Image 1 (tube, helix red, strand yellow):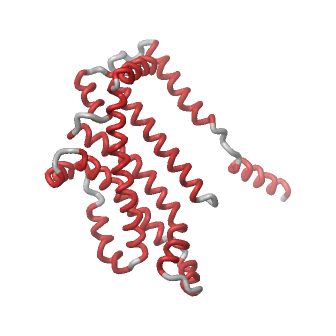
Image 2: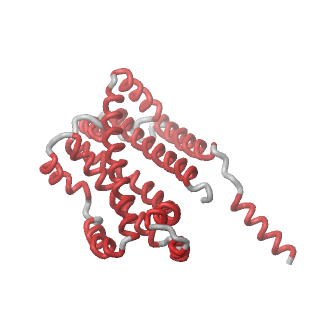
Image 3: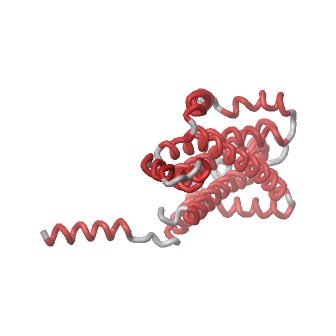
Length: 263
């Protein structure tokens, strides 16, 4: 019996041990070193896979010329605006759908019927509605962010313990206080799951929209240098997207720790 208890204690300790922060850095650094070695040994021709050192040189040249800043800021404006708009509407509508039976019965089937449609396929129609400019790109990103956020928020509200809601109502809480103090905190884990999923979708739609209807931006830059077969500068855009995705994820994780200290 004592041995089994000690085994259980050891397993719990193993699960609870903290992973050092430098572990992620080691993984990325190891991948970059391996990548550099493969390119230095000419296992893969530089045209198909340029070395990280060559990509850094190309990035520096683009930074000096100002090209990198222009494309990066254009993409950040689009993805930031679209993400914020889609996330706000997604959370608000998701809370309404989860809390109101009438809204759930009327609107939820519409949401689930539109959700499977590839959002980038709607870009020509949105351009027809909103004209040529920044608005169609922001709108398509917001639309792509809206659906995972609204569905996850709706699921989070539905998974809140009904006993907590009944207890709050019993003690005299009105609808606003029930949503603010019971439903919203209880659904936050699912909301953040939707926000993280939407972050990746927003970058995918950003690149697709910029490749189709933009002169500036990371997606337009990747398409341009892909057509010219300048793979070093093409990979600069690809690495920028991976860095943006990592920063998105880390930022949402930090915000989640602040708002959900118990999790």
